[in-house]
Image (cartoon, rainbow, N blue to C red; front, side):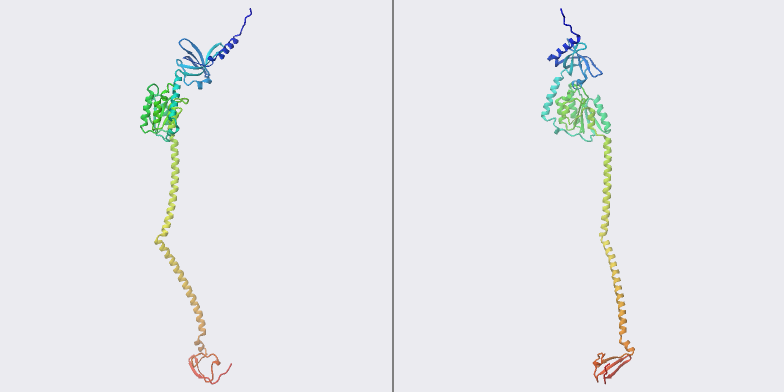
Length: 401
């Protein structure tokens, strides 16, 4: 009788195909307790999932961890694994290949989270129009968080490194557990009444259960109704809570929240010095301009003063007087020279000089000068003046030249 003999590889391959063809095993979720949890240096996680009656080997490869695992898994955690059952052919063993791992009960919390988020978003509490701007130069910062732990230390460290003069007011609140939400609300309301510049509300990272207080409606409403701008800094960069959506600013970490809340004092001081220098230069230029303008106005005022105007007119009058005297003297000199010339000419024509030279001056009986024989007749009486007297004569005869 012939027997069908198969190799181990063929059998394991057949079993592997059976697992792949099974619809239920291709996509299922398992709940149980974690044991024998090991993080491999390659990034893979190997663990066993067990309950009271059985156990199954599980693996989550490194490529699935970024999206599929949101917490640090450890032995004893109650979890829900979503993935598929497959065969590891080299050893013929089957195991669960995990695509997603969450803490037991987290699914219900996520559903509750999404429901409250949708409700508050519908009321407009997430709307940007209600977001208050953060102050540019905050000097008084409130912090609502646990008094111990990395969050408060990170906030203080970053704040003091940016602005050593900032005042930090801490409200020590419970940030985990049933009493956390009322404690956070009390802290927000207390600091809001103190007239601070900004308030940071937050804590370090954790599971969704650890952060759940920041998903409570009373915390969301306390943040929304606060008059002081609020920065939400809950968990790590990938964690989102209702408080993040309601707050005026969401920070990925408490350290980033401190960066948002504080200005860099050295940059501020340098800017003040630059502004002071520009202002001083502008003032110096303005003062110099006004001083020059004032001097010009003084000169104009001096020119417009009556004393100066009188002085100017006096100087002008003196100059005109000098010019007039010079003109008059010049004219007198010209007239004197002309008079001398005329006098010389008249002196040359003087009858007395003519008479003294032996000439005579003849006039008729009426006293008219006789300068031609034609003006006389025989028998006319004439007078002849000489230098020492006159001669009375009668014409007895006339001779033409």
